[in-house]
Each structure stands twice: as C-alpha cells, then as structure tokens.
Image (cartoon, rainbow, N blue to C red; front, side):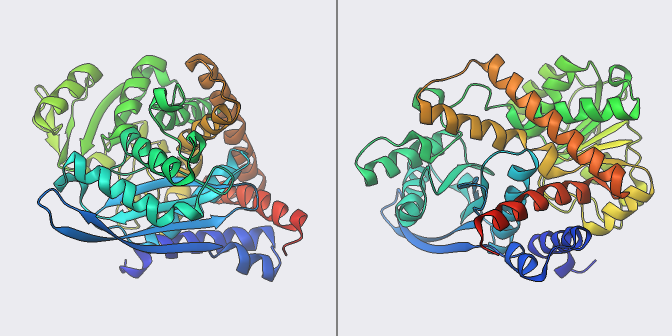
Length: 417
C-alpha cells in the first residue's frame, strides 16, 4: 500500500463515500458531510523552564454540529498532523451519532513531544493552547476532552484557563476532568468498558462462550490496560498476549492482570515478563485467539496481514486500526469486526454524561454511569448489527450507515441542505 492510501483523512473520506452511496445521499449532502464545517490552525508561544520561548502549532477541527456541540479529544504528539485531526473529528461525528448522543464531532492536537517536557512546561503548553482557541470553544459550541498523551490534569489546567478568560467557573467546557473539578465517576475505564459491552453482545449473536475464550490485546495504554482488567472481572476469559510500543508477551496459559500491570509499572514495558515469551506487535495480531483487541494506533491491520488474522471477533478499541482493504478481506474471511467508532464510543458517551452532570450540578454514582453506558452501547451495537444483516455489508459500513443517516437527517431538519 502507498503512503497516500494509509492517510487517515483519505481513509475516512473513502469510508464515508461508500456509506453515502449505499444510503443514496443527494449530491449536496455528500459534499457537505465529507468535509469539516470549521477548522482552526493556531501558533502560540510557550516559555520553557530554561527561559527560552518555543513556538508550537496546534489544531482544532469542528467537523459537524448538526446534532449538537462538537465533542472530541486533544492530542499532544510529535507527529500530529491536520489530516489525522480531520479524520478523528469525522470519526467523532459518526461515533456520537452511532451511540445516539446529541453531539457533533471535533478533535484537536498540538505538535509537541510531551515526554520531553516538564510538568510546568506541560501546564504552560496546555494553557497556551486554550488561550489561542478559547474564543472558539465552550459548553454550547465545542467541548474538548483527553486523548493521546493528555490526561485529567491537562484538562484541569485547560478548564481553569478558560474560566480565567470568561471570568467565572465553566466546568462544562472540558470533560475528562478530575472528580473534584466536576469529572464523572466511571470515566477512567469508560472506553474499555463500553468495548466490553459490545464484545458481550457480539459473543451472544455469534454463540461464543467468553468464559473459555482466548484474547490478545495490542496496546497497553489506558484502553488496553482497562480491557485486560475488565476481561478478567466480567468474563473470566484468558488474556494470552498483550503488547505496547516496545513489543509484546505471550503465554498460552494466560497473563494475570495485576502481575502484568505491576511489571509494566516497574520496568516501563511489558516485554521480559516472567513466564511469558517475548513477541512482536505484528506476531500478536496473527495469534490463533478467539478475540483480538487492537488498542494501539492507526493502520495496524492492512491488506498485507489481514489474511493471517485468525480471531473470530476483532474489537477495535483504537481509532482507525484497520484499512478499508483489510476490512474487505476480514469480512470475506468471516472475522466479526466491532468497528472503532462503535467499540470505543464508551469514552465519549461518559464524557456526554459528564456534560449533563456539569449542566445540572448533580452527580451520579459509578453504578448509575455504568448502567446508562451499558444501555447506550447495547442499543448501538444492535442497531449496527441489524443494519449489517439487512444490507449484507460489514459492520464498519453498517455503523457508517447508521451514523451518517442520523447526521443527514439532522441537517435536513435544520434546512441546511
């Protein structure tokens, strides 16, 4: 595959075009929905600890707000690009629509390497980004959240900076905040937990006993770690392989979560875990397991390795791990893919719950959050599954069809197109 074909924005548009064709959308609607409504490019200075000033470039894309304020994370990454942000903003639009929450899609990013920055430098970077964009976001317009290399502390700084700009506290401008600042119970594991509800429903429709299933997880960040933990708690399945950016480990007898997590905390990597065999990320994807969970980066399953995927279910906790060419191969080979913007929508769903709680200044217990999340994810899963069965398409295309139809309906009702 060429680099152009692996461009996430080109992939997002290609996937949309297929769905628009199947839905027989009129031409003006197609043109409107395949591009962002607004995007911002900002350049801002940050004083570093050594007294020097560095200039950073950031982005914010508000893809579509027909169904409500745009919503989406902020990434701090040295290789951030506007095309990645555009693609993720598009996927956030479809993600919010597929789980039927009243939000549009957005995304943001800053080109930086947070691993090389001190805590005080990260704070100044976070505040600088909000000063550059603060007039274009807000609880009723665009609500950011954490993403790659940003966390609750970064969200706290951003919320505080926005509140300073407005002159009063605005907790609802950001989600993924610490609990004392208006965060929601249940937010920490929401992405993985939402994926678990989808996996549970997929196992039901496929007749798979999760109690005896074997599972491999690529990626051991927030989503991957919580997936490992929740699999043990909810299903009792055997997680036989996990990996991070430096490589993976495999033990056919299973990997205990507490021991694996403690090893990574102590060493910074999962490899060399006692009793396990070191494997590569590529080898992990091709293991003979019942369930594969890509929870790392984009474009991990391509036309080159898709024919060697042996899992019966592939649950995408990562964004964009599978290319369109790979999707077709997996579909023909009978691999049941739970697509990213359905499978990992638990995070934005609980972020929406956080917005609701901020607006009412009334907060729910974790059990209530989980119950509401289960209901949303289960309903969304079956809407996608039924669409796929009805039209004979793979689940990603079915998810697009559900989501794009809902956004197009809102656009028509507003009279925009």
